[in-house]
Image (cartoon, rainbow, N blue to C red; front, side, top):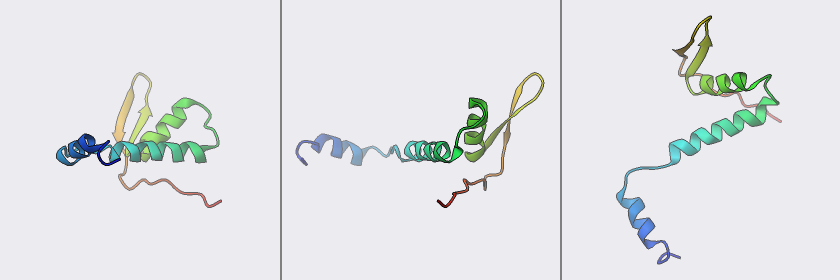
Length: 80
């Protein structure tokens, strides 16, 4: 199998990019979805994701303002 993936392995060692941050974001969204037990609507679910990631959408009369939330916001894990 090493010979089969030899070019990909060389490429991975040469290029400094990783898909780790995207995988982390996907995992956080899946955890939120699992513990959500269903939000009232998609907008609430979306706002919860942004709140967790450190950004919060706040609706006003005419526009949606993006405000920076505390960076210490973390997901509360529920023990089952």
